[in-house]
Image 1 (cartoon, rainbow, N blue to C red):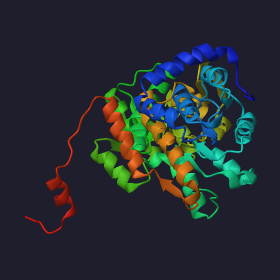
Image 2 (cartoon, one colour; image 1 turned 180 degrees about the vertical axis):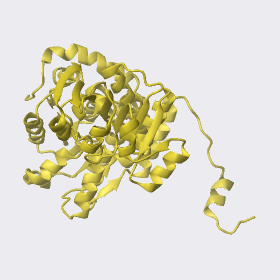
Image 3 (cartoon, helix red, strand yellow; image 1 turned 90 degrees about the vertical axis):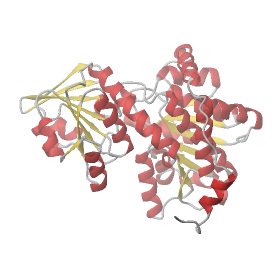
Image 4 (cartoon, helix red, strand yellow; image 1 turned 45 degrees about the vertical axis):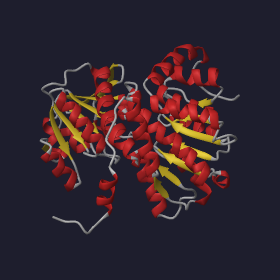
Length: 417
């Protein structure tokens, strides 16, 4: 079996990480049991471009238990857990092409290697794999039933492809499931971003001016967590509704050029490019810390920072110090996803719901993909609700049900005051 990983001898350590995550992913465990019995993906080839973490491993194992033939590559050069990659290869016979710290050329070579399986289903985190299929591997399209996309950034790209009329197979936007974005994006990003910043820097959050670019679900979760740790949270936005919401939630809202002058820690979560740029670097205080939790490393203009810096040195693991106008600016994790590059990504409890949506969406595409138009679809509501139901059950939580009278009332229009 072909693969390209750092060291197969790391497999035992990887198995422990996979086991630990599995203990906290009870919904996926329930789905895996059904998949093991029913084999709904028997004979299906799946190419996945995801962060190679212990949580992702549990999704891959679930799909393999369902009968699928799988190849996996990394969706970010710095997010691979090498021990997990080794365990998937050695103990589960899953093709993995991922090495933490791989260069850009190797990153794209690995995506091509994963696609060599000639997939029926693609699974993406950022849409790099589907983009390569459309640009360079169009011979694969006829065998692809459909794909799944995990991230806000990827969904934006795919909707642009649909709008441009170039999308060649249906995509389920897993990111649009309520049991994904309300939990993974909010609670997952909020906690794991703080985790990455603390592991990289060990600075005190309390009392700092904590600037967050973007107040979508990721920004909301991060703002909630930063405030909970005692930070003075400042939000920058381009959307007037989100900016108003941030203000009503009790946060200071201002343009980045103003926030740049007073911020101690900056985090981008927008899905856009050059959100922090040369103008802002020159305004920053001595000791400012920059981090990104958006999918791609374009939100902080690192090229501009490199160009204007008088000097540069690595001061800690995942911390580079740049001197600009005699002031020190600290960039974390090369401007890549700080929660995955400097920490371990989202906790398994929230990835449990995200990856349960992935697993059930793959099953749905195998059944219905050939009937769907070449569009971006939201996760079917019945899947979203089933994931929520199973999550509540796994947490030992019961809820009320409507009476027949209440159901009829909600369907009626005649009754008023």
